[in-house]
Image (tube, rainbow, N blue to C red; front, top):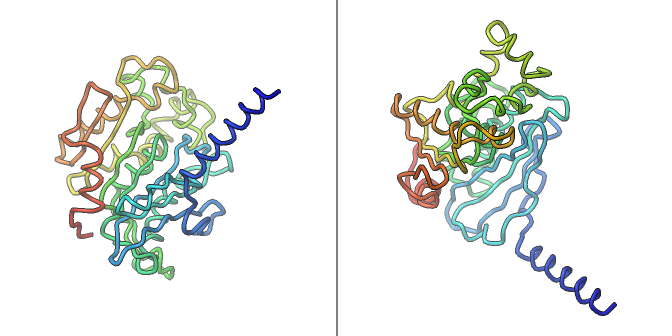
Length: 299
């Protein structure tokens, strides 16, 4: 019994130690739009001058997932603010463009709060993994979605950002291209079809030319990438071909290669890291700090 007590006490202390290493947001569940999942958490760094902000978009295939409720305690020592957003999901009955447009709305809202929250609106960076990476890259490459004639002051603001760093992101959702470059396992993932109101990859492929191609391509970085887009840093674990299973395939390094190839064609600034096989021209922390802390950006 004594041994069991000691083990339980050790686990409790371990959990407590983990908890004290985490910090709650400065502002929690702040609404940034009309949808019930248009809400974010914001960690504010004390500063005499405005700071950049890193906005995290969670993964989950646009089907599930949620924003971060805590951050590591060093979040206030990074030299920039941090936010994490929720957005509409397939599991709640939503389809595109609800997910993508939520990311754009969140950026506009952050700009709207810039003075109140001491944010430098020229230093907004996006980050995320998987679907959060896809949304981040899509928004980083999309033309400005500001509506200067809107009655909503938030909607009048720019959706452009200063950069993005992402992991395991999908740069295209074209099932034919993915099957050819990554393998048949990759196209089995629901992210390719469920966010577009499609029940299966077979239905997606059968209706691709006449119905789904433009709809799907619209929400990918490959569709929108151009020379004037901000720099992006893409990270992946590996690019082993063919993908060994669906989970491996949907986060495959060849997604990064596909976008990097396009970036080199159009002159866009894309840094790619794939495990130990492909090394980016600079370390990730240097890239992040160059945008959020050191480098001047005019939006």
